[in-house]
Image (tube, rainbow, N blue to C red; front, side, top):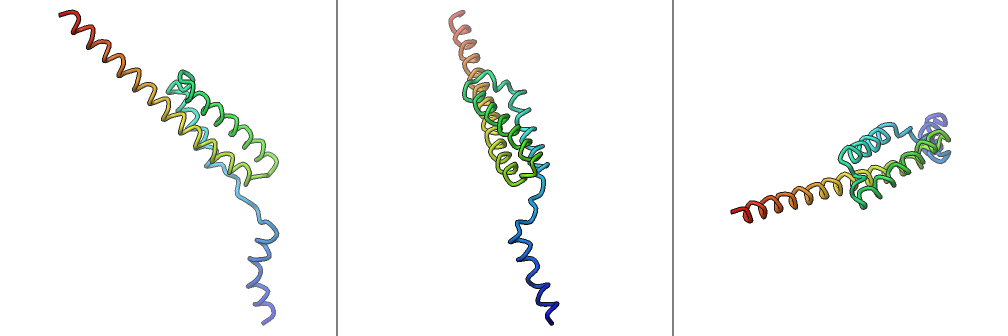
Length: 116
């Protein structure tokens, strides 16, 4: 009976000791992928997108350092922020491209109207 009681409390003892946080490799891959996508969309060409891409890349580097120090929980949190910043950079870069495309179309339309 005593043995079964001690087995019941084992998960609580392990949780109290801190337990290990898994290495966030999947989240790292996701954040790096979003960063690459922002770069491919020329996020550096838009000031807001460039800022968020820079923040994302800094957070990815900090997360890698935290992972080397076995601080996987901190790394996971940094990578969550990095993913959010990288995704925001992607959306801002897409918005800047759409705005530039729209302006180009308006300019072409104006040139066609003026040419008549």
